[in-house]
Image 1 (cartoon, each protein chain N blue to C red):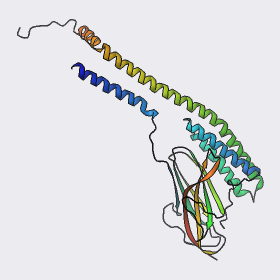
Image 2 (cartoon, helix red, strand yellow; image 1 turned 180 degrees about the vertical axis):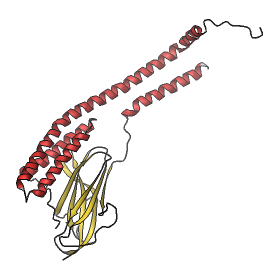
Image 3 (cartoon, one colour; image 1 turned 90 degrees about the vertical axis):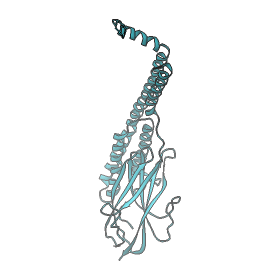
Image 4 (cartoon, chains in turn cyan, red; image 1 turned 60 degrees about the vertical axis):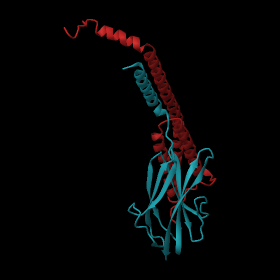
Length: 157
Length: 145
């Protein structure tokens, strides 16, 4: 083995060891996002109620996943809307908050929870709107994440 | 209307409910900062979720059992305050662990570079000395003998 080859091998081993030593200090950049889902009574994306009687309880499940890279303080606001209610990824619904579900979720963890709901007034095309809010630490306030979901219901008398 | 009572955490609500809500949110900020500093916040999050569950229970039972609701809110506030206190310790230990990791990594890098430099500068001599030591009793013979 000549000196040049030995130097190359030595340099390669040195670089490898240095990279291995520094790798744990470098956090890989990954996309940050949250997920919101509303599941049916069997915790699947089937079996959503479309028609219920007034005050008839029905079961749904909420599903939230945290990939924000840190612990998150989530609230799901359930709002009662109708055809005229406007809700987008940028604007939350200007509708009465009927109930709130609240949980703190660590990074890469999922929060699945039952929601026992009932509606006490009749109406066609009633919208149950689910909005995901998260706590903004610098602002010390809950802020709308832009994630929302809904189910349409005909509520019979 | 949906029959479940709302938790009015978004409103500037007075009283014990607002105190409990604010305590939990303040504790969350401490937990968030502790995690940012490298602390393991698993236990703190579990405790904070216990406080959240107590607040939700209190909100649900407020109309039927206000005394229990008051107790639950008080317990939730106490838990949140404990979480805030403990998160300082978690944050400090996280910072120290992170610094140790940093120093450990930098030490490894420095040692590796030092050893590599020594091998580069003195490796030849050391190799030859080692060779001579290993083969000190070796008798060289002609191959055609």
